[in-house]
Image (cartoon, rainbow, N blue to C red):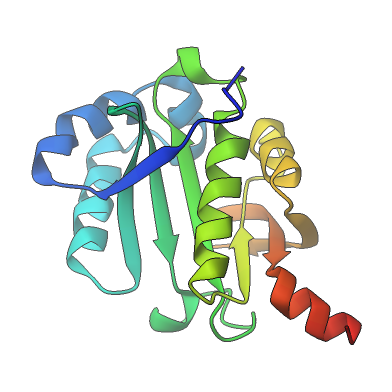
Length: 176
């Protein structure tokens, strides 16, 4: 299990990360959700790194890359299916790289840490959208404070849309 004191470092994806990302995307646990077109997925990551709507990041623990994370703004992408979410909402997509690290709490810990950081920076709400069959991702997201707000079918297929609202915005909604 993860060390409760663990701190994850985030850094932008650089071209030198592509072989590592390719090796991660070829793992069975990633292929299941990313699909078999690893080359196409890598091209999407490169395109995201060059764009403004998505921030592709490597998550490191003690200097070792362990996961790929995207932070995206659905309001900056034409026709994004989550533009119905409140302005300022950011989306998160997380993939643990090494299958030996699955089931150890890294997903929950990363989502919690990143969510807290993004809320401190002013994000009002965060969303994740795991596939309904991805029980591991749904559990990790729920443990990180995300709650299901609906089920949808997007260009990626069926998703469970989950949100976590910042404490500041939650207090305002409660009238506190």
